[in-house]
Amino acid sequence: MNEDFAELLNKYLNKTITQPEMVQMARLLELPECQLQLAAFIDENLEGVPFNIAIPEPDAEGIYRQVLNRTGQNSTARVVSISRRISKLKWTAAAVVILAIGTTAYFSFFKRSQSPELAELSQQQRYKNDIAPAKQGVILTLDDGSTKMLDTVASGDVIIEGMTKAIKQGESISFSGNKSSEVAYNTIATQKGKMFHLQLADGTDVWLDALSSIHFPTVFPGSERLVEVTGQAYFEVAKNPKQPFKVKVGTQTIDVLGTHFNVNSYDDHSIQTTLLEGAVKVNANGDSKLMQPGQQAKVAGGAINISDAVDMNEVMAWKEGRFEFNKVSVEEMMNQLARWYDIEVVYKDTINKTFVAEIQRDMPVSELLKLLEMTKQIKFSIEGNKVTIMKW
Image 1 (cartoon, helix red, strand yellow):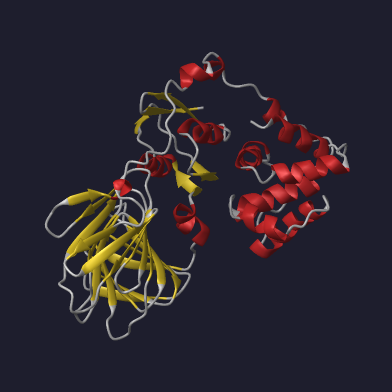
Image 2 (cartoon, rainbow, N blue to C red):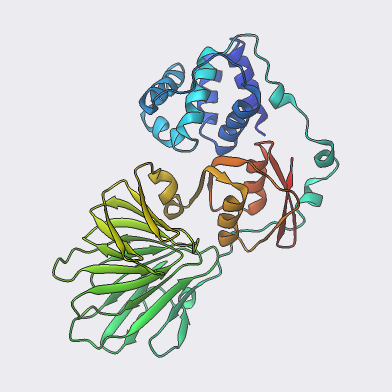
């Protein structure tokens, strides 16, 4: 809990805040922990408060700009960065609360002590072993079945396979060859806590999330370009109308028409394809549907469902090094953490709550869990690599 932020909010609501303190409060609102404090306060303490929370998104951002403008700050960039971290609904409520709630409001939420059970446990007792992001490695499997740990290949080194060469540069590898080169099939797979970028021989860029893989030919001499992925991947496909690009994901195939899109197949029962630019056609179970930018196709139960209600910031958060949770269950949230950290998740209690948060992926797991505990809905303990989840 950020005590400075709690004190400043209390002063603001009681109209005792000074102009320098207003500037400080606006700056603190950029911190994830302060955003979670405000969101948790709204969830737990504002039932019956007379304000209309159902405000359209542009108006919500306008209200938030009013809050920032009172501090004399330039609000343009801040509205973009802050409003994407907490759902529009919550930021609308937060903005209205700060602008309209009465002067006698009392932030008992921020003065509330920890539960007796938590108070009895020291930081060392609750977090007996902190865990950093796993960083386990990236494996390249060549056509002959041999493997290379790409993490151990020096930057600038060349891997030659037939007439095809691959050059490693940092967390990226690029393949080059021509149609006369002998075709070989490679697989690149990421382990926990690793992302990786590769450029295929046709110029297509692919980013892999943790616990993901791509199986691909080193050159594309045929009538089509076909690759196969598992886990989560983002594609920026090089245009070549004479040689269509296709992505196979389980029993689903995506026909690509020179485009940017994300595919998430972590859940075998629900594969999601999200289109950012261009056009794709999703084919599954004898059915096919054409997608437009801003849409998401979900293949589940043998059917293809297209949705226009897509939060692109949430979909692409992984590629930008963030966890972004927008009304997700604790199970979905912990599944994401388990792919990034080397942890085993144990549930002591059933928790039927959803969570909204944006957190960087580079922090130790204890810091991340402490931020989530600020919602006052959930608490954690860590022993070894086991994370135990309990009700607050």
